[in-house]
Length: 235
Ligand SMILES: [Fe+2]
Image (cartoon, rainbow, N blue to C red; front, side, top):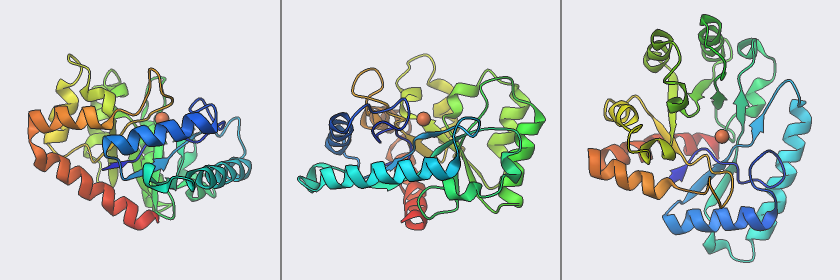
């Protein structure tokens, strides 16, 4: 089991507040069966310098790894990443590939929360075509109220990959569309997007249970293969 979206790193964003909480989140994930987690703190270009962000992130990863040494079998393997919040021009932004998942060419992009326009899709295509990156669209289920045509275009865009949060499958009324997209192979990755041990704690296992029951285990195996491809490139 691979969790490609999490806010486990302590003190970087609105995720884990300290080392102790990070270790608890990792322990809980491992208990749920997660073997590997990408640590993807929020990156906001308007308030953070990419160089400083990476310095802080890498220092936090080092500290966390040090703390994990005491009990290595209790934690999943970890790989660094980032959740890059969309900004106009991201498609042509120099050095944006430094924010990719590990050593891979995959970048986790958080779409705009305000109304989507064609400019957003244009940037996504530029990331793919001009920067040669594989764009992962974060938590697609949060954007189902956006312009239907733009969402559909994104879902069908070749070389653009869709990620869904575990919580999308735990919402009895909301899970219909994510389940349909998963069945159609349009959702490529799952993530917990966990932030803490409270309201937003690791929850991948519960979502997988629902998915397995509703769609069968082959869908989960496909998600695992997709995630493994990302890991192979990232490590
Ligand atoms: Fe996130």
